[in-house]
Length: 538
Image (cartoon, rainbow, N blue to C red; front, side, top):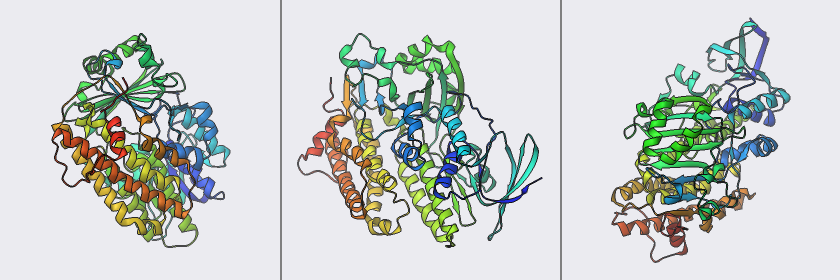
């Protein structure tokens, strides 16, 4: 059956987070666009135990709030996140007896913990309210890509039978199914081999009560609600997450380097419980107290992968996990959905204006892959550091500065497609990317040479003024001159931070060739030292 012999402007394969957000963004930017979203799952979706990927960071949160207009839902129906928090707690019975890295109060720019079932139900309803043809319970059976201006065609099934749709833009948001990526053999091994297992418990894990007899530890955070953080319990080669959901459930996961902790050690609930008992006894006890409230269990071998192409001048594109995926740490999935969707909307705008697509598709893809490669460097070969309570906090301080100072600025200030800006700052941006890659290699050397220690206390990132300010500054609205000045200032700050960290590492006898070195102790040196465990709040 033909779809009423209608040619649609855009057909989106997949109505999960990436696909529904793309549909909403297209509708906001092009109100007259004829958009169809095909989703195999039927709505309403189950709460809590629907999909993994519940934590957001600043780009994704800003995208949901500002670009899609979902602020009210996020503030009323989801949880405000209390930042990323790490405990270097391998083998520890009590979290107050190990190094903790995090914030004592919520930073200015918000992020959220997302119940994916609740959120995607809302997105589906919102899509229909905004006039988008959202077809849940519909399975894609096949598609043919149009060439040289021809239309694309999609075959799908629903309760009414088989349908054929024609469209100008075919946009793949099918998640790890990767319909276009697999058809076109675009998947690439990126050299980062980690596995994950996760489960949801229908119970709140109130981490602040695990050391209830230590009032000073509990009250070190204002308010004392560590449970609202994305909590990471860490050891060499792995980390375990705890993410609260607004439904009252809690998400628990294990992510590990395949070479250090094979998936077979935790790939079902029984083995995961045994694994936690061995490596993270405090979390193990909390899980055992409510193990009978298990909602689901899943595992995934090979979380991370790359892609050879995501945008095409033939009017197809990939977004979200249909294209590529980095790693769950730092929760970049929502960010890369936001960035890909924004580039897709730019390409649609060029198409509607009659401009040639090829140069824009190449330019946007080159930038997108540059962001991907820069972020991949934060993960690849770095999992051994997760148990190091000296080096890992310094790495997190660096990674935050790089993320908030460069990529976030480009997104928040709507400069992802600013060709003039990228041409003007190309040397500085390239130098920053190269410095980041050198710093990630350096952290590995420092880890190998460092004297391990795990001093009880909070490494409070709120005591690092430049980190707090760079986070606060994300909310500024800047003109052209202000954007350039902000980026130049942040790029200079990166060199200062790198020099301060290198100066600290020299105490451990770590070679620092190729890195800037501070001559004398600038203020940033003391601030980085505090963030990296030289002066914890005990």
